[in-house]
Image 1 (cartoon, helix red, strand yellow):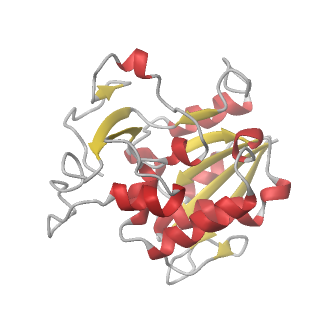
Image 2 (cartoon, rainbow, N blue to C red):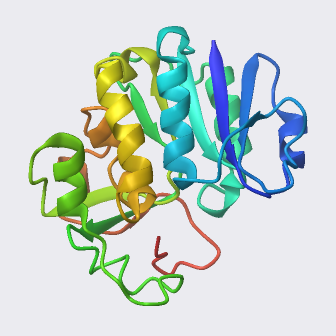
Length: 229
């Protein structure tokens, strides 16, 4: 079974009407007007998408789908062919349904790298109006009790697919801790965006394949400028 989990906040969800058959849909709505519809699960507007994803994992830990795709209410900014990606999972194309080979897939088109202070990406990001840093060192300590790496390489957009067995490599207590971190640590959602593979104890991008590169466009994009998130 495949489940699509959508973290919604005021986005237009008309695109969900055309999902392929064979996929379970769960929408968590944090909109002030509860605009996602009567079938959505209402959550307080805290912690951004990281809180939503972790809430789903904690509440469904014993009943997770074989595969879960975690997505934003508007997934296309960082994954313009998201609908095609969803269909590929439903159709069992390629190796996406082989958890032994690859239990975690980033969903997006731009790989980038931030340092553990957020100085490379987060600090100059256009939406970071006060130019503050991102304390990934403190975040890693709060979540894992370790100092963490100097660099975080990830796919922008905080969207990914993961197999149930990979999620369960970590205990429920760990995800309960992560859920608390998502609402107590400053800018936690941006820290999680850079760390989702590490949350699950995985390496999402092969460092040998990167060959030292910090920014990689996986597919041609309309405006190939480094996105900041």
